[in-house]
Image 1 (spheres, rainbow, N blue to C red):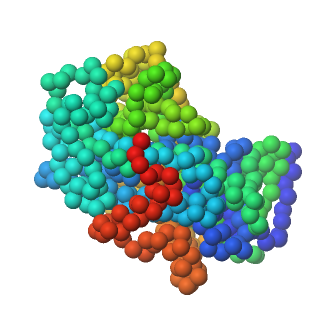
Image 2: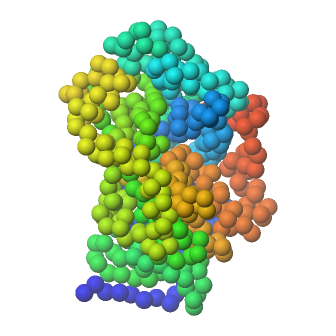
Image 3: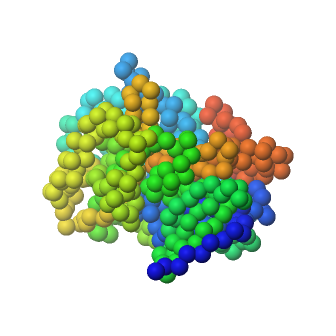
Length: 503
């Protein structure tokens, strides 16, 4: 039988569960703000960023809302709502400032290893979609965050931008594209591992791989929380205590949040969506495309399934992906269990989950269609964006799992939310991050929100405020209506991160 070790000793100040971009960001923020803080990080796999943060497992666009059409919905009156795009663009600017500060102080050494310039584009066809993109461009161009956006309905201009997309296309078909040259490609897997490597070398930080959290509960004797850990290599279990626990375990966060049994966790459920990419294997084709090109999602498709023909740098090599193709699995993690979904169903969330299901029948229908796709079906979808694509130049790559948030709603009974959400205890002693896109790109903003909720007293001190303003010059300010500040911040971060000049 596996051994179990009990301990009554006080553990670290902070426990981070999961070694992804969220835990890395929070860990770095806390050590920057309070250098003497002690942190233990526990990850079930044998390396950091092996789930959702990994480059092949979805993360990588550098979501700045330049090209993602699901962030700019058309309203019933025909107007375009860009409020979500503005919020995401502002959040990404905060991430850029944080990374630039870490590079300046040599915490991060080699920015081109995790962030590179790449144009972000939206591309549509058909008169109705062209009208939508034109209205979107006009609405976004008025914002200082999108003032540099270009737009064209001229096939010749678009052919110069993205030749693969236009070659072999019917020239009588109406087309339109917008382009932001200052887009980026971010390898969140590389960034996360760089941050953890630095954290591991700091006093008071310990990173443990191959450990799974089996349970957690409030510590009555010592205060804070105790977590029960299993060593997946040896089978032994032990308990460890901390004043604060962050659950940043991607799709695995929901089950751990449920185990905490905090009142704030009740009513939350999760809906898993799996994914696949078509990965180009022909280096000549890969070299002909230099952009991230996003289109419009199919009816009923979840937002993370917006099709895109995507140039990325992975492990120092240029790659070309198309997808993602959505699917359904009851796993909450790529390396998870098929029992994840059924085990997450509890009395407190069964009603919201059922009601959310009833309200999202088109999504269910869409996922069934995606699961049943043949290779020819996937090639057909690719050819809408790359008309001359050949089957032999592409292979299937399994992407990561996304678990969308389901929550109680007074009117609907239960709603399916797309995005990320922090769920925290009233006393701020534990917090979990649920949801998915655009999570990684906005990780710094999300973790600042967590600090506001869980470390309010420390956050209001002059020392913490001053340090945050050093790390993020616009901290506490909004730049969305300030074109001068937008330009100044982008110029500084672009210079430090090696993004000056466009690819």
